[in-house]
Structure formats: C-alpha cells, structure tokens
Image 1 (tube, rainbow, N blue to C red):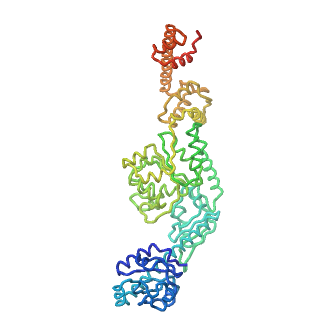
Image 2 (image 1 turned 90 degrees about the vertical axis):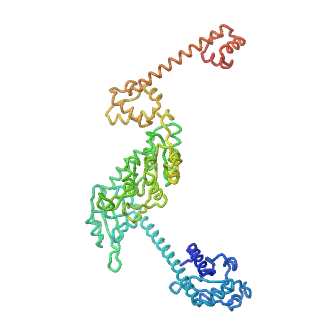
Length: 582
C-alpha cells in the first residue's frame, strides 16, 4: 500500500517552499483522512482534526473550489460551520493509477488571499495539479524503494538458508548477491571480490555471460577445486544475469581442515601467563570476542598485540573467514590507498590487468587487523573513518560502491590520546576504534609470568632446533626475573632462543644467557654484599648503644635516642636481628 506518511519529511520541505513562493497555506491528507503535513499557520488556524465529508467529496470528484468556507453543503457538521477561519480553499485529489491516495489543499485565511486566488483560479489549479503529481511521484518512488528492499531481504534470506554456495551476477559479471557459504568459500581462497573476473577463469566467465547453462562443470585453479553450475536469467531473450551455484571438491574441504588447525595455534590458550593482569585480559577477551564492535589494543613493543588480535579473531563468529593484517608503518604513503581499497584495471600506470582487491575487500566477513594504526597517514584516516561509518568502499579508479562486512581490530604502541591533542590523529577515528580498549601490560609488570613464558619458548625452540633441554638453573631464572625487559615478551623469546643455541646439555645455566645477564647477576651479587655490610654495621651500632645504656626499657629508650630512631623501630630491628636475651 502506498503511504504518504512514509515521505512526510520530504513533503514538509516542499510545502514550506511552495507556501513561501506563492504566499499560500498548504495541507496534505491521506486517504484515511489523517493530516500528514501542513504549514504552521494552517495547523494553528484549523488544527489536526479534519472534517471527513469535505475530503470524501474531493476523493470522489477529483478537485473542489470552496469559495465560501463554512457555508458550503459539505460543511454541514463541521466544527467551523458558519465561522470557518479560511476565506478560500482549493482541494485536489492525489492519484496513482486511478487509486486515490490523498488530498492536497491550498488555503488562505485572509481577504487578500481570497481575492488573489479567485482572480487566478486556473493558475492555482494548475499549481495544485502539478504539486499533487509531485506528491504522488514521491510516494510511489518510496513505495518502490521499500518494495525493492523487501525483495532484496527476501532473496538474501532465501539464499542464506541454503547450505549450497550461491551468488547472483548482473549482465556484466558483477556479483550483486551472495550467501554466507559463498563468502566462506571465497575467503578461504582469498578470492572474495565483487567482480566475477577475479574469481573464475576467463573461459568459464565467457560461457556464463553468453547466457549458457552450466551443470556441475569442474574447475581447478591452484588450490581452488569446485564444481560450478549457472542458470541464466533473461528478459525478452536478452541476458540480464545468472544465478551461480558452487559445490566444493573434497580436496578443498581438506584444505579448510588444515587451515582450522593453523588457526588453533592462535587460540586464547596460547597467551601464556598466570598473573592477575593476564587473567583479567583473557576474561575480557572471552566476553568481547563474539562482538562486532571495534577493538583497540595498546601496549609497548613486543607485548604480543598481534597474537592477541589473532586470539580474538579465532574465538569469534568470524573465525571461518580471513584475518587480514596490515602494518600501517610499512606501507609507503603513495600506495596506501590502493593497498587498503584495491584498484580497477587502468586506474594508474602499472595497474594490474583485471584490477586487484584491497585488504579491506579480502577481509570480507572476517577481521581487518590494523597494526601500528598511529602511523596511518592523516588523509587515509578520514577514508577509513568513512568505511567504518558507511560500511562501503570504492576501489581506486572505480565509481561502484562495494558493501563490506568485517570487524576492525587496531593496535598501537603510541599514546593516541596525546596524538589527538596534538592534531596528529583524528579524534573521530580514535573514538570509532576505541570502542573496546584492551591494554597489554609490559613484562616487567607481570614478572610472575616470566618462568611460564621462558619454559614455553624453551619447548618451542627445543622442537625447532632439535635440542633436549629440560629446565633453567635457579640462578638463570633469578637473573631473568631481575631484568626489566624493555623489549618485553619478544625480547624474552630471543634470549631463550639464544640460550638454546648455546647450551649442549640438558639445562640452561646463567653462563648460557647473553653477556648482559652475567653483568646483571654480578651487579645483583654486589648489591647483596653491600646490603649485608650495611646490615652488619647497623647491628654493631645497635649492640654498642645497648651495651652502653643497658638492655632494660630505660637503657633501650636512651639507646634509641642516641641512634636517632624511634623506640618501636629499635624493638623491631632487635627482633629482626634475632639477638640473644640478656
């Protein structure tokens, strides 16, 4: 059913413009006699309630001139009978294909308006007719748009309920609809794109676009083994598109199984540690992994931001789709846009034939990991913000919008809030990314995890370097725990790898750690010696003062005063030294 109410915002703008141009009051009613839109003065004079018989007459006859409002036959029963504020009204029916969908009224509440309309009735009738047609056109367009949206959603729902991989192309080979199964299939091969030319071999595309019917035709392209069927769609014998179904070859299913095993290596269990900070972080990740909200991971270099991003992806509903990583610090500014958004054939000198999908397109259905986001150029930050807001992209050199569906995880070792205050990072992008903030603590703040991590890396490099090392010596572990680890977990891994290379027996001792740890151990030992010397001097001084003044309460009070310490402090130190009773 065509609804005028659905286009009320547009009608209000047009009514205001019409009223200002022709100095007339305007009102629009639907075929259920509801006031849809009007000028403020009309609402003030006549209110929202309408006299139904007046509108019924217009819907029946087509148009009416009311030259004496309140005194016409149709005014019987109206609350304004004999005292209508209007001086004149011209009403016209809004029609679509002989169906009455509403009424437009041009009204004046002044004598000057009455005289102007009376002298120019034909002109205002033409204006009213043109305006009625415009209102009908707006309503019809909105109805068609809603119908198309409904059909699109219905088609998408039908496709998504099918376990088969289905997609629809237009006459030029552009993919217009696809289901989840198709996304999974294409994302596995990193071939997801909106162009058929980047998915299937040229000879198969030619057959499809020529309108031929295909039934389970076998295609092998690298690791991409499928059976393809195509049903052409035609209008008056002219090819307008095709519905394509893809069935996986058993080999492809095995490849998916291998990929799943690889992803399992990056599960949450591979974030090692038992510290309170790591436990809290894992708990939070379990809560937010299945969300679609953006995540911003912060932490010093080497804390494991990429590993955490992979763990979030692998624990999400998007784990069957790709995780595409892009290091914003490693891409030259000149090619940043084409790397992120892709490009069309001929977009610039050296552009690849057939074009190339960008990282965002390749992440379709999955996760886009933007590492070192603080290094992204400012001009690209505004483009990324638009993608997050509108969920569409355009390849370089293209005017076609591609709808994208991916979760964004960003990471940085920089202080983005400080960068925002210095105008080095866009504030609006920062708030879009920082929906779920996750902070990885530096290794020096979770030293209880050092032994766990060291044993994990020992096992890893035992396997990699074919060694049989079992554990670390106590002095080696003490030295590792005493170090501040400016390079964090990555530096610890490098140290363990070095030690595994150096050791030939079954235990990593202090001598097999890098030289700086030997120096650190020496400093630690010298510190202990100095502490013991200071302690012995302190004991000697306290004993001497007590021997001088006596070991009773009075003597201890005098000794504490001589030493410049409180009496309670003296008692505590005596207890710590475990002095014999005297």
